[in-house]
Length: 268
Image (tube, rainbow, N blue to C red; front, side, top):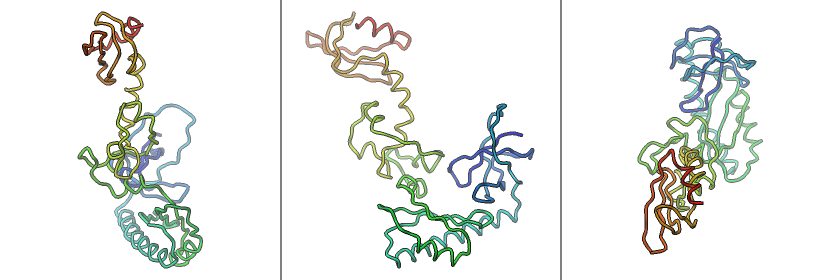
């Protein structure tokens, strides 16, 4: 059996299932068995089938027209349930904002996602929701990055934010990436719509880390065929740096990609 990538919501996390020898194509809707119960998902990728002892659940079947109608009905009723949950939370003076609600396909579970600055004691609310919707209720507190992914928007680059387009997993981004790329610590420049560090800081960080290994640092003393002086600027991606010579001249130095190690040795 082949390994298939399935997502349960657009640009959501990708989960791996075996195809059960079904004739599947990318974009097909399928029904799968998960720990939460039956779920309605979409085929998004076909993965390399390496021989291993990997264990994955098996796709139950290709979704029928009836399944698709049920899925749409579940989504509509989940949205109404979210609005109702927000009303109940307000009545109970719970400082929480609901951003999403989803039924499992078999309606055995109704999951609510919400934002809150602090931990919330929602036990009374959960009991109230369970009594109304007659199913297992899960209330899940999520972060502002999840909110941005759900709502979407236009980033500082002028394009739709990555998390709502193609990022399946929101990897952690730290200030180390900002410093590694010599970026300004100005929050308006390095933070996304969610108020957290831009996810795209991860994209080129490996290149900066690799190229930096053989580059001088600002402040280093340089003595080579170009002259003797101090490094005053470094451009990691293009592998260029500038020195201020002892005579007061500024020289821009372009290191050939295949000569970086030799250049650093020569500087020493």
